[in-house]
Length: 585
Image (cartoon, rainbow, N blue to C red; front, side):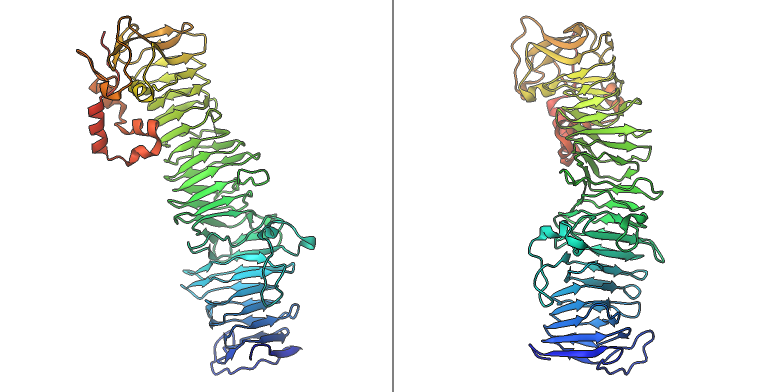
């Protein structure tokens, strides 16, 4: 039919389709006809399932609302126009796959169901629109199959049937009168992917008031994968309810943030699915938008709830606390919101970096950061609350913030932090001194190494250098390896004497010996002078006992970038610049 013309099938009855059915196909009748629609094809059929054959053209195919007929849209269609679905379209079934590679838009005012035959991947790239309450997209798939949706399911407030569109994308996030802009998707035992790595236009834009997302089990649990090349925000919870009641039951499925470059997904709502959340290498999952009203989180009561993080997990809630109990993988965790994040239980085993840039990261019920290779409190307002059990450092701990609780250092701690509990350094531990001291409120027990060569990199030492600002009342116990009370050490061309009763009586300080030349700030000069050794030099036995090699220095002083330097080259640099402290007397 030509542009401007209208052809109607049926008159609100069960007959009227033009078709040719030469095949005895099971379960549905396959129409062999080809129909070119450049005008309007109106499907006024009621209480019947039908097949139209192959559709081409650039016009409008319209199925009126409330006729309760089902259009089996089978095969590949070169149609470039708009489909107005008023009741039910089967865009795929176990008997056939559906492809609409060039369809412009779908105005979905009923139910659009996508299914697949065994072992097939079906991609539908068109944008969906809705303007009446009660529409949804149902997705099912057979074993070995996948459905990829690369468009967006949006409300439409203009353009009519022939060109549905939205005047302002923000309307997808704002409830309209009588909920006419509420739309949803039901994923029923299916493997579904939103995006194909070439867009950052999320499939379901909106909040719990404007969209619903159900992850259900049917034959098997469902899987939902996010695959975008830029930031997207999911503003609604993924649950397991029926139709508009998303939160009547937890979702039955798993979620994957695919490791596509630029894939940066924010959950700006607390999720309600009982399943795993996997973050691929290079991808980012953010819990919370960082703004009021955009707090996120994961369901914590499910037996299948866990996070497998091989990318970056960032928690940035403004007011709602977040609890995570099982977090594994090789990726990093960053606390960057005002609300507290609490890690609980022994299932916290991720090996990537831990960063606290804002707010508090708390450890409870046996949770530790023993597997995390570095812990950094990057701002003065950052807090790490290690609870009554304290924290044992086996990697590296650094930054400007505060550790609430006791710290046992069996790895590398960089001064500049504040520890409100006790500080115990074992024979395997190392304290790296920079411009600011380590501040400790509780008891101080010392052993292991002291590395102060970094002072040359941050402007050089003064006449007196405070190593540990001990703000408690008790005396220090123990000594750094090889550094008894009053021992002298060399830094550049200056000589310093260490004391464990300095300051207000129990600080650890380095005091320049009278008559010693003024300190040099050049790192290359470290260790100059007759009989002097580099301030990082320590006995071979102590270095071997640490079991840490060169990498804790790179991690503690320079963050993850230190890992990029080859081991052989880094070790060579350490030999050129020296080891740890050297006692000279």
